[in-house]
Length: 485
Image (cartoon, rainbow, N blue to C red; front, side):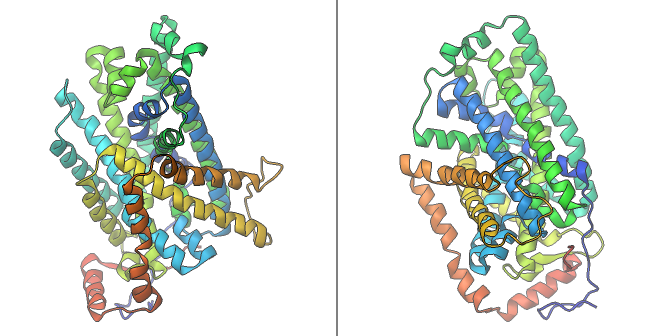
């Protein structure tokens, strides 16, 4: 029998299965990355940097940063082979207090903001064909987004294998969609499109480029948002088959595929749209579809919505695991660390993530959600990467099935470069164009100390919480989970 550290119901231990292979891993990473970003962010990237050439540079550099960051996280994932991503790495390297700040921020800000932004993107594309010539009402968009979040949550609560299969199927659909856009751009180019000639001529490509720290930082926020998902396998390491082999292979295959597709898709957009048209479009793929496909342009709305659905599914799959692992390590209420006794899914954590995401959805808009998601996320990515540097310098004897030295003469340079990029992404917008919202986000992160000291450090746990946990354990049919190492 299983005895937890709290006086809750006693169950036989449940153990989550390793259901994710190499194909599933590639689908989880690339399927999450290819989502709303490539259909929503191009206009914002171009608007921030001011020229087509500079926007393509931002997209390429964002891919490089994502690849280097993913390889660095891969080394961490093979040293600390537990699920939980940034939270578990910060906990094992820096201790309980910094890890609690990371847990609260990822559970209440980063993951819900990401889910809400994807849901809004999906809703805008899904409703666009019904409101041709004008933007769909925000109430309609928010209702569709909320319904989508509930559908994805239900899938993930019911079955892990079903969620992974959906991810694979939708990845195939996304790659086909982006390939279709690329082919459409090639056809337009072979027909002598005057737009591409004007957009990407050497003397015109960088005309009007904005070089301020703020605009570059914001452009990278939007670009890297489209690559969000490079870290997803690190959140589910305990559910990955042979992580020491499949983790590095999956991220290299996935990010290489996505980077190449993103660059080609952006060039395709520029073959049929002027920069002004692209920046003024609320749905770039729809505008592209209307110009290339004519009356069949609505197909791109459907394709973009399906793409965002797959990305949302992948984000939900990994996002619930942060809450689950944090609770398992005593940083959140114990009920969130439990899994369904039959389905073996972390249903309480997934339900909690759903509720927070729906709350974030109510006041948010896509652009502001992405900017504050990126600011907060890269703050903790920098802390995690500094932890990898610490392990490399202070604990080189730790077993490393995979090292970030495979392709570099100086192994430590790769995480250092990503750390510099992370620091730039956090500080650049604040230094060049400070906004009070960044202060609010920072204060929220550090306000966690008010909860940490009494409830985590001193273990003050009211009896009411214990009774509530027992009730929820019976109601949801969940039990504590053994680590799957």
